[in-house]
Image 1 (cartoon, rainbow, N blue to C red):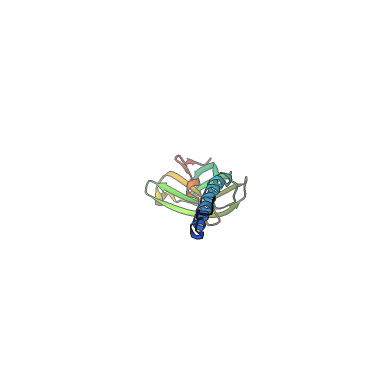
Image 2 (image 1 turned 90 degrees about the horizontal axis):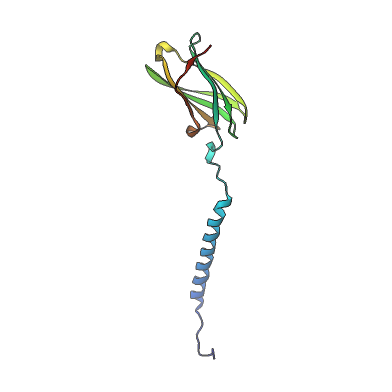
Length: 144
């Protein structure tokens, strides 16, 4: 009954099996994506919460204190300070562990830059500047 029928050539069978395996692999990769959590890169788990920001008129400096509410250690903070006569940015090196509190100050001569309009604080984690986790303060008050 099957004696007169011809079979599939080995080349066609090989191409068919490769196509089936590639298709099954693609399906498994797409299904597996749901089980993998992306960390967002080096800054994915970095977040700070500003507790206090003020301008010390006697010392002519911006003082700030923040909490590390992320799950990575913050190794520094870049402060971008915008004033009526110009702007400046300074990076402060300090280590603040997860759930820790950090504080520092930055010299900001009011006679050179004018009155401060706003300040942006950007966390640094392992030399990566985490711009998406930055916090801006629009009203910098005078320290008491």
